[in-house]
Length: 452
Image 1 (cartoon, helix red, strand yellow):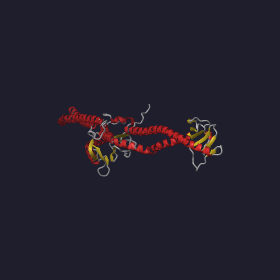
Image 2 (image 1 turned 180 degrees about the horizontal axis):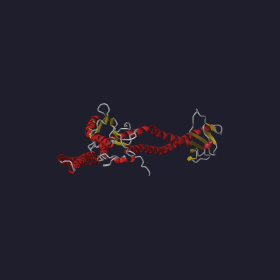
Image 3 (image 1 turned 90 degrees about the horizontal axis):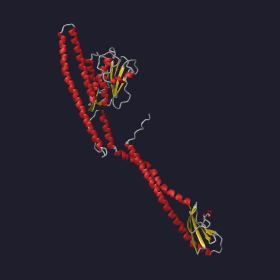
Image 4 (image 1 turned 180 degrees about the vertical axis):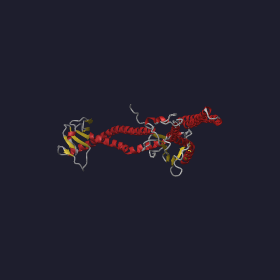
């Protein structure tokens, strides 16, 4: 099965498109300029050929009149220089009378037509005078013309090469600045994934994105109303359930105290025990509803160590641990977190209760809070690796005969999922032969936290 290619951001696509468009337009402009330049260069050099021929013609005629010999002569150069336009003067029979200092007769056509002509190597112009008795032919190597055109084109292209890094940098910086409001909107929207249901600020967004921001804020508002209604229903239901359950439990306990030993007293004891389990189950269901409903992020970061101390004291007293709970805390108030203190208290209490119920009652339980996370370790039966993920489901329990509802780790998982935390389970812990460890990593934490 093929993997999807890595998605490109809109910012990168726009920057690359603008850069490619600038380069393409520059190259197209250079190509058009080269075409125009070649045409203009041809006209200029043709004009120079004509002008040289027309100026040499009367001078050559005067030279012929003043000469005593008819042998061909070569004009001596006044200095070392490269001659781009050379000329030859012939008589009516084609005999060479006069030629420039660098003239190569092999390049000159033997009987060129009057006017312009082109061979594979040169461009020529021929003019006649004195009723067709003197002919002047000027030639220019076409390679010289092409070299002049290419030098001009290079002068247009080299600035593009030199300015390319600057153009790319300017385009990328401009696109980045233009996308700053969109990036801010994206980051604000990503934060809403951790239980924050406040509206997303839409100031500075371009017109194309404003409708998206409005729709997102409307959806967040409806979601917040739905979650608030759900939390209210769960809280009201739990409150309404507590009263009749407590009343029934009180009546069962009173009946238990009044009945003599025998079968009715045992049935009353079973009823009281069932009502206690129902009370604990209703509390767990309320916690699960709160964990899945939201409200897990505090308005401002708060220290977690004081909360964990209170949870440990209550657990040690309520569960009759007898000092088995070993608490490892950092100095001071510990790490700051935007996790709601009540949500952290529920998370920590459920992990500790899970360790107490399913661990070895003769072995200590370690609860460790560090900057990057929180862990609870207990000794006891090893949970098969394939069943670890099942323990996160509601009403699933490990290999133990202890009483429980099977909701503890489901509540912890719901809190971690809603608050953007990471929950890791392992059995046995690293370096141990048996036992169980649950590690909650805070956002941005690496793999530093380990259970000793």
